[in-house]
Image 1 (cartoon, rainbow, N blue to C red):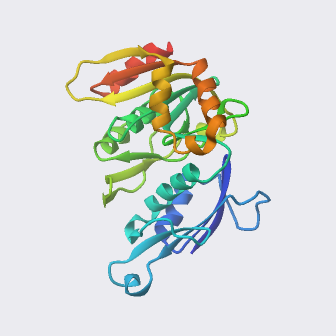
Image 2 (image 1 turned 60 degrees about the horizontal axis):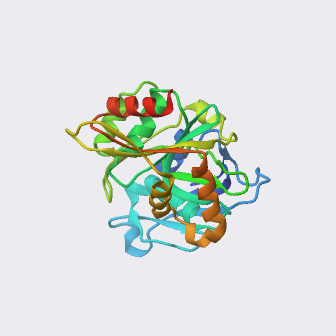
Length: 288
């Protein structure tokens, strides 16, 4: 049984689970964030439990259940997916709970306080490109899945958690210099998945926010000619708004925060057929 508290700016999470795989996952990917229960003086934003299935499910086809504040928001998964269940559940918590931030489905990396935001639909290559920028080009990882925008100051809050990789991306990222991957989980709802640990420098800089300077909508297309096209802020707003989990709940505050974020940003569509091509296009866009 593991019972620990994680400070993952901007939230503090208590995690309890009887699964050894969850303990190993947290010790591998969150070593600096872990504290013994009762040691933290921070308010606990999310009280998460990963529980075993009840009844006959404890013995035959065991399951893992995700509970937030003793409420089970979605269906159980097979017990051997308990660690990914924690990551998926935490994403759901950040996207659905009212924390005062605008939360968007996008990867974010930064350099010298300037952030590159990469919204992307599943299969677009967002996570692979995020990992390449982090491990190959030395960008600081803010987030692989969720762009967290603070409306009051217009900055993006780093939450450098594991980079979630699927299927072919696993082999690609495993060859990146300095990349450390965890176990592979097969037969999930997303296929085979694994996680890449954020660089220690990204974790150490988690308190340093960044301001959006570029928005890139990546799209992987095998055997397609590379393409980079600058797009207007109005189009970028409409497309990001579709990827915003809580824009309606944030109301005018969220609307203005997104407008302000894009006001000083340049926005691009890029199409690429390989990681090397994607990196070259991003270098041209950012001048890095």
